[in-house]
Length: 232
Ligand code: NAD
Ligand code: APR
Image 1 (cartoon, rainbow, N blue to C red):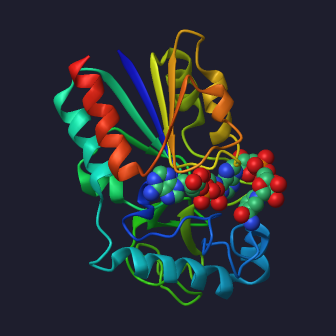
Image 2: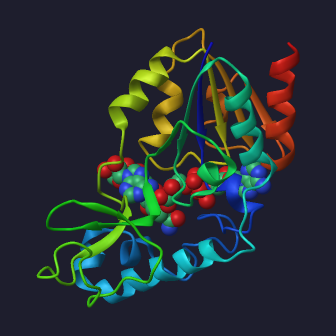
């Protein structure tokens, strides 16, 4: 069986990473145009770097750990023969830390930095600012940016995601508000015979596209649903 998973901020909420659009969400206090667009980075690079510096520091706090939903997905991948792909909109590294192997972070990775001149990508755990020296080209200055996809930029791995969506026999969307495209459109790329499951605290604009919408916490519902697959 070919299985495609899509995760969003909701799966990391119980690990202590704030979601975007819920009450106290990350966008609160910031207009996304001011911190998550290429234009914002041109206009006010300090503000944008600082927004991501704070998020990177929070992610590196020892209190932030994968939860039962991340672990259940990793265990499922490790113990089943199915063709499995985990596409995440999250820029945290919690799926990888939980042990997932086939992870496609379509909105980039907070613990990486990218050179705006060469496109080189580097593992990154420190703050970034305009004076951060380039890791391999000291003559290039002030050109490292977070390796994240901003609004108006192209998400990563779209061709691979489209192929996986067309082929999937089972598609599970977990903890995503389904308002940001193209991620929100993946469910419509699946074939009619694909079984489609949504796991979320609440209904989303996409709920009608799914065969089943499971309402509840990811840490409870993801392990429960995956174990129901193992016994059926
Ligand atoms: P859109 O969703 O159609 O996306 C426009 C572009 O953003 C596309 O090029 C897409 O490839 C790219 N994109 C998709 N996901 C992205 C991501 N996670 N990070 C960066 N780029 C991404 O259009 P839009 O106008 O950006 O957003 C759709 C709606 O969502 C709008 O109504 C917008 O106001 C709203 N929105 C709200 C917030 C918020 O919570 N304050 C944040 C962003 C967007
Ligand atoms: N269990 C299950 N679902 C949850 C939980 C939980 N414990 N907590 C919150 N949720 C659900 C909410 O009901 C909401 O539908 O998770 C969803 C989180 O939605 P958003 O904050 O909008 O996050 P996401 O869908 O990942 O955002 C998409 O938008 O801003 C951009 O790049 C950003 O990747 C992000 C993208």
